[in-house]
Image 1 (cartoon, rainbow, N blue to C red):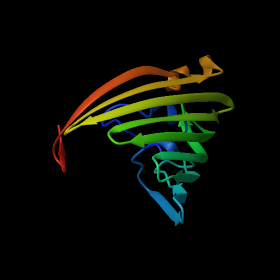
Image 2: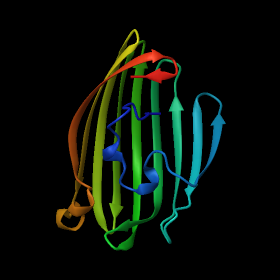
Image 3: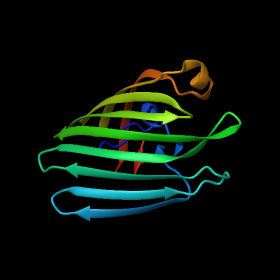
Image 4: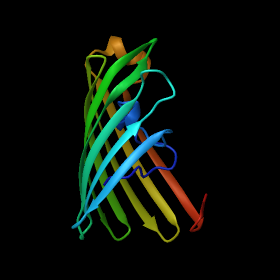
Length: 172
């Protein structure tokens, strides 16, 4: 599947629903590894905020020559302004890795408080010995800009990152 490749930025376009974000607390995950590179995942996030839980499912496929594909769906409630609103999204991902080169992308479409939001991220990385060069472009747009702009649902940026691996366990 398409991983979050950046250590600092990236992934903003795909985080429509809070339950789709990385590093969530109270996340209960069940993963089933099916033969031939297929993985099915189901998760439930019990939020610390009242009526703000979410649940999701995904199916990914990693083939032996470097291609990976996946689809996922997340549904739940989240805080928007002072209200808890309905939110859901669908993810479609693809990536290709060969040698020291990686390229991937994600397309997301969803709805937050009855406003359609969609976005995408394109990512590339190249490893040269202990140095990794990474690039991402994130774009996310909402149909009703007045309703969701204050919440940060519109995103557009480029990000370039260089990481030096001092050891296998420490990056600079």
